[in-house]
Length: 196
Image (cartoon, rainbow, N blue to C red; front, top):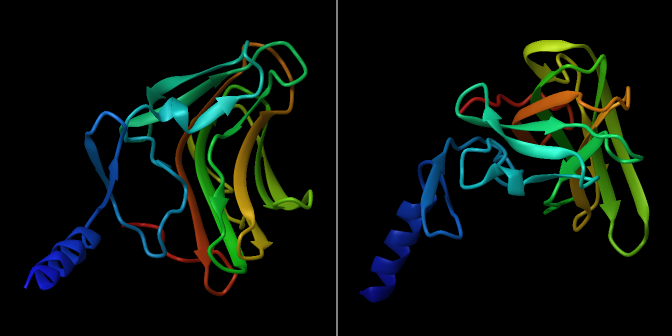
């Protein structure tokens, strides 16, 4: 009887919105997508979203801002060789060989913001990826890419990550990021419906 009850509890927990348990013990519900969003805390609504993306230069700043709905990230560039870049602190381990797709929403004071989507084969140094260059400034929340796919084909076990860059390399540029959505595309066309 205990096994049946435990199975029912597990099944009930698997249905409905995704629930993330943060270090402080609080839970956070986010909409469920099909196929699922593989980006950790991609909507930036759970816990401290600044843990999800980090600046590559300690003089650059990543902080919480107001997003399309709820929270977003605000990146302010600094002088220095990497002061114009920030990237995901997480890596998604590809569960299967497939095409993986990425969409993000940005606002930016830059005249040229680049969104990069990488795949890396561990221990080999072999990387592949694509990027989308968004002209700007982008004064309202805009989907990147707007009407094409941003994808990368990888093998099972490869690592997927995201990077954002201000191509002008000018200190004080602001790039805001929200609703990072990374998913596996069954047909490789990245045309799956992404609304919950």
